[in-house]
Amino acid sequence: MLNTVIVGTQWGDEGKGKIVDLLSEHADYVVRFQGGNNAGHTMVVNGKTIISHLIPSGIIQQKKCFIGNGVVVDPCVLTQEIDYLVSNHIDVSPQMLKISNRAHLIMPYHKAIDKAREAKKGDKKIGTTGRGIGPCYEDKATRRGIRFCDLMDIDLLKEKITAILEEKNFYLEHYFKTSPLDPDQVISDVLALRDRLLPYIADVSVVLHQGSSNGRTLLFEGAQGTHLDIEHGTYPFVTSSSTVAGNAAGGSGVGPGLLKEIIGIVKAYTTRVGEGPFPTELFDDTGQILQKTGAEFGATTGRKRRCGWLDMVMIRNAARLNSLTSLAITKLDVLDDMDEIKICTAYRYNGSTLHDFPADIKTLAHCTPVYETHPGWKQNISGITDYADLPDQARNYLERITGLSGVPVKIISVGPGRESTIIKQAVL
Ligand code: GDP
Ligand code: IMO
Ligand code: MG
Image 1: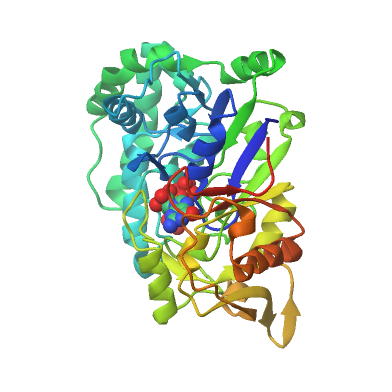
Image 2 (image 1 turned 90 degrees about the horizontal axis):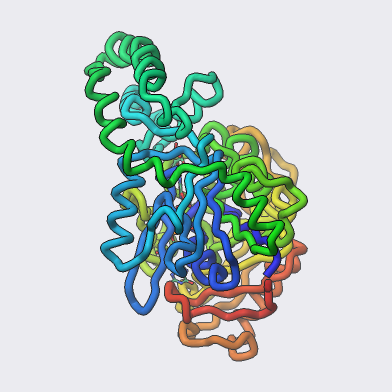
């Protein structure tokens, strides 16, 4: 397999975890490069469900896994996730997992600020996962974050935390009117995890480069989705990292020349968790059917996902922003019972037709989808493993997605399990 990047094309939860798990079989190293435990990636193997938030999904296939410099890591969640995977008989020893010495730690004050800020915003909230993601990236950008390499020097670490808490506590107490955090407690909580974390810390950039030079294949696992990207998404209703494929390089410390195959994961319809405009959202029975049939509940927060038809304006946008070389269509089986299926091909806005995704959410909120309607296949496709065995209507739907995006569909997922997959064209 060529070095491959997997990214979400919509607003997350496209089924990235399942496809990463599947393709990990052919990779040597699996790498997360952005986001944090706002992600929830679900794998179903032999009927057993495993959800990972931070550790690359490749760990299930027992491939060497890496958390790159672009990821923000909550050390409590990380150690809990290691324990959870180990209790499921998965080896997560330091031989299997390395964390970049440049990755930033999500600290208790990041979580406190995330929650307090959302509460203060009331109905203008973003609908974040409350995991401290935004405030952690904020500190990274303003150059006062705590990085894994800071765990090496205890005195300096204490000094940094004490200094930053002076400011954070002022903000928490006087702006948000919530309780301040005790510096001694924050420091002792981090130090309690330090000995456990130290053996996992490495210069991930150097290790990936060495591996790649020795012929190891890299698989990069994106979190969130293209339309949650801080630059290109539905700002401000986005996450705080760059979710697009280019950041697989910057977020892990490899050069962009190493990225060869870029797979965009496309859910056969659209979902969104949290607030923000969603042109093809369905508020009728069909939306509820998609939500129920697709079991659309967030893997991280358990919130109901909003549902709507497939939006090809978004997928075209994702194809351009990520240089997609192939598409994997997931959850096609969820459409099995539909009489007809709609695809949004463009937007109507203020009397004109838009083919490109607008930058401004006020414009997006007033866009109405231009739909084309396709007949449903009205049969259970979840057991099909050969493309040729799919009903004509399903194949036509997939061909239309390729036609409208200009990107070939190579993988089709028809159920949550590894086995429920059709490989139309090898991506190896
Ligand atoms: P991720 O964040 O992109 O990894 O996606 P999530 O794991 O949050 O959400 C995808 C959900 O859909 C999970 O519950 C998967 O088990 C499930 N899933 C993935 N592919 C399929 C599929 O082809 N069909 C069905 N019915 N479920 C799927
Ligand atoms: P995976 O990797 C879906 C959404 C949140 C919120 C916005 C900002 O499982 O696809 P944040 O906590 O990141 O500051 O929240 O982004 N969000 C996700 N939605 N899937 C995810 O990850 C998400 N990660 C963040 O719901 O709207
Ligand atoms: Mg998810």
